[in-house]
Image (tube, rainbow, N blue to C red; front, top):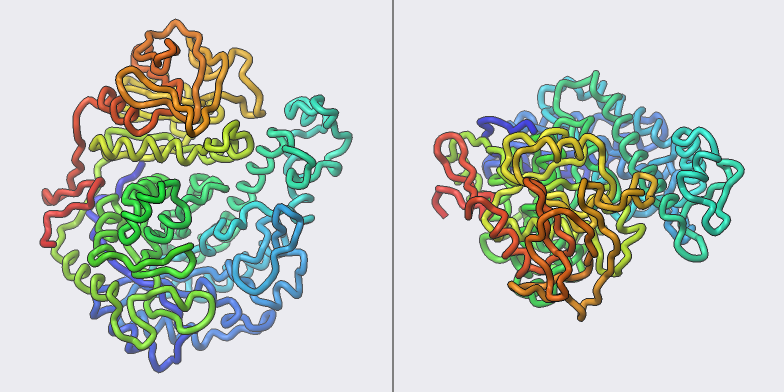
Length: 613
């Protein structure tokens, strides 16, 4: 992982000049700079104003907007507008829209109304990206480029359209070469599911009962590959036309495509952080936790994604959209507590964010997001969040340049494992993200800073401990890294429990010498297994046959923790009490502090800085 050295954290904002009279632009730009903002993102939804009819371009307004913002001293993040194809595009290609899992087209009238597999639309995106790059790629005011916007948002990665079906069949033909090979590797002899031709293979959405898990897993791999290819096409078009870094803004708990694979072609990872919206919309926390944290959000949720996207960005990452006040899209949309907008930004910077941009400059008085707060109210006055950002900018000006050390502890996070355990959860409560997140929260309670690593990792470096929970199938290089590592490696539960073809390994899981999982059971929410020294096993429990040392057994005498030298295996999903106890025994010290150049202290855990509150 490349950690940025001596970077000065900066603030920015998302701005939509096409939404406002041109007479306002200059004053807006001046106020942004006076507030202490230095970056401004534009253009991600502006295709219809750039090209209102096919090949009819209107550049004058965008040229002037870029000039106005740049002359004020702002660095512009220019965006490709491909998340919102204009109406004429859908008229030209009626089959470009995605279909939901019930076989219904998802139509025009909001955003992200395209299918990643549609070849002609991808070509249109390359065309508009190339034209934008030729016009603005060397513009001195354009300092970064965002490709598209929020891949996967609104459940748009998985499409069940005829276009996707044909592309999936081509993908399978390329992967397996012959139908006989596909039948063998999928195990299609079961339930007489054999195919004679690739064009017989449907998408796994309208089957009578569950589809073959190997079929469903390959569809998830295919869908992810389409996002990767879509992004790579824009990257390839833009790269020769600009020296500015290329980036994308990911989302919170969107796991249906491989972010590491998308990020491999980009320079910086960014994500859109909405702590209160995510607490209400995407959190597994209980009702009491959500009530108690309704105005501050779940601090671990933001921290986890900061660490994840630091890894996706290979060390370089930003927050592209930071919540400035109430949002409009969650089941409940409370105001942040006083000071939270500031603290959220500081937390991001503590995790290494080079830039934190706020969404948005002025609250829109029209259309779908009019209830979403901005740094300004619709009347142009500063909102409560805007006041905090102005104060924060002054605060950051007093900081020295910062650099972040690699953490001593890391978790391997694997998007394919999320897909696999969605395909075959075995228990309604089992969720890979939740398993990893529980572990992450436990490590933070124990005082550890945490790095996230991709499953393609081949060397764990000089870290002290690595955790690999719930890994679907072992990549050969990752298994080699485990055996070649001198530190502690904690695996399980459910690690290495399938092959890539969604079969049990013939030697039985988890694929570690001297250890076999011979059976599993899943536990009702009211049927946890008590541990003698405190805490319980929940959701997932394994029966072990092993020559390893037993560290702990449950009250039934079944092994729940085992060790073999530097390798440790957990044969069940611990609740918070058991996890805290286990991590207390695993960690070699009570707390890890990360330092930055200039002796300024940064703590991943609390975003606590040696600056005035």
